[in-house]
Amino acid sequence: MASHDLRRILAGWDYEAHQITVRKIAGDDGAVKIQMRLPLGVLQMEVTGRPDGSRPHGFESLLEHHEARLNEYQRRNGTDLGFEVSPDDSQALRDESVMYYHRYLAEFVLEEFDTVERDTARNIRVLDLCRRYAREEADRLVLEQYRPYLVMMNTRAQAHSALRSGSLKTALARVNAGLTTIQNIYAENADGDEEAVEESTEASILESLRDEIIARLPADPVEKLERDLEKALREERYEDAAHLRDQMSEVQARRREAAPNNKRRKKQ
Image (cartoon, rainbow, N blue to C red; front, side):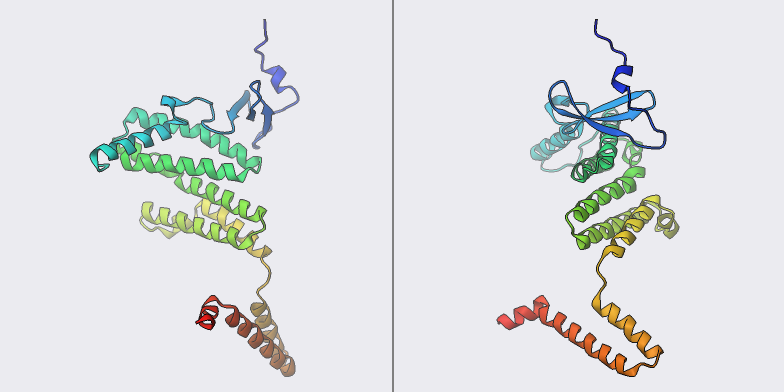
């Protein structure tokens, strides 16, 4: 009789408190699986589709099933007015989202940022569906507390993907966009309370990431020349100051020459 004792599987893979411990393994079906170590065992997930591998109602997930219901309702009625998600279905969607939560945490530890972006964006769609169509007000609101966290994780994934490809400016733009989204969420849900944003852990994490990216950006030559000019003036090195002004004028002229609007004017 085959043993079902988990100790054989967990041998040599100790649980570490306050740390997300994950690994990839080859399943008996030959497909790659993600495993997450838990205090009393292990959580195993598929890398694509629904994490538990099931296909509810023949769809990749319950979310896709209800989105298909919505699309069919709109096709038949010409509107989404009257479409509802029942309390039981809302709870099932929340339970399903927890599976994806565990997977995108594991993916982040594995630095698989594309799939973190995929799964966080997917869970945001659950929030959007429930907020708009859940029959009960409690079901419309209960998930909203997680929206800033999902936006933060989705933004981090986008930024790290951009950093991996060497695009610092794209990464910075992604972080700034994420921060704006989080600020708008708090403005909508906290009656514009600025302290709510300032106390937001999610905003703080993105601000720290933004600072790290900015520190890695190459220095702007004009800004450096301006600092050098201020220093030269303070030290009464007027010849150096004049030379620095000439350099600043040359850099600014080159920028104007390279500007897209200027190029279009030349072509006309």
